[in-house]
Image: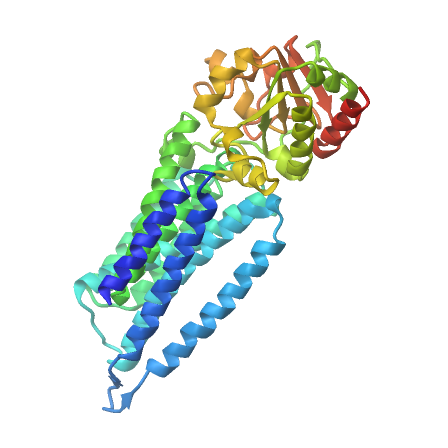
Length: 473
């Protein structure tokens, strides 16, 4: 049985390895799904061999047949819901869906721990006691799982717009959450050290509060990091739940998700030149800030025809997608424009910033949906050396990740953040609805540079109009 769980774990590892590259991500996802199917089948066979459980009255109860059907029905229902969501949810809503998945994962782990408490109290008696290691993992599973559950749905609300994307200050600032953590620790010690089941319920309530108060002070600019961190926590919670019920498959899967999510969180923080502590406690990001007043600054407004002429005479074009591309659902339009340029023997590639969009890999997922070849998707390190030799850079809905202030202005709040240096290209075209700031809430000097052309429009409409003008040349 353990060997079969290890086999499933190997499939999980191979799946994660595949997810490390856009080219192999689809295959990696399929391998990981196969691993989960193996883990479920192994669990079903394990349950079949369970011995009857004896209640306090001495009556033997066989749970095997009940659990067998619960797992089968649950797997079928979950698979059906997952399939519907995969087909129906728009790519623009994918960050919200990922946040919800993280929340449900954490909540499921907490429910496993609660089930252990309830089952022990029902079968063994109200004064049931566990092995110390089980009590500790029950407490950890509840704490981490419930924090992940409530925190993920706060993140969901921020992404959906039902909760403000601006940082919300707490009374006492970070010290408020410190007090909550201390109270959680005290309730866990009371539950574990003094065999008090009520302590677990208090721990759950405080954890639910911490999930809310931990995420709500974080601004919209940091949501990619937050989603990645919550994904990691959902994995840790699953691993703890695996220890609670002694399931090696769950331990392996949870540990892999937790480790991979944390590594990605660190990488995302580094891509923003900020520490994880700064992300969690600085309250950075002011989504929803109003338009910037350009004043006397020169703005080179362009028409689709102007942009089409620049593209028609270019040899190398780099497309920089941002969240505006996702909002306008313009991934197919940008692919169609690229096809038209390639027919004119123009080289078109895509420069992807690690934190573009609202979740890790958001732009890669969008462009993959439009069948953009993987070999033309360039990361930040490969993109920046190419900009000086690029004739036209087409920035579609990106802002903070192309802001030169991060490189040139030591007083800027994003100073030091690695950016795509699009201002070094011969011509930069920025497609944007207005001069409004990005999530960081600051002005972008790129918009006023002599080599920049601003096309104020919805991304999809702008790209379609540029293609029409290109065909008329």
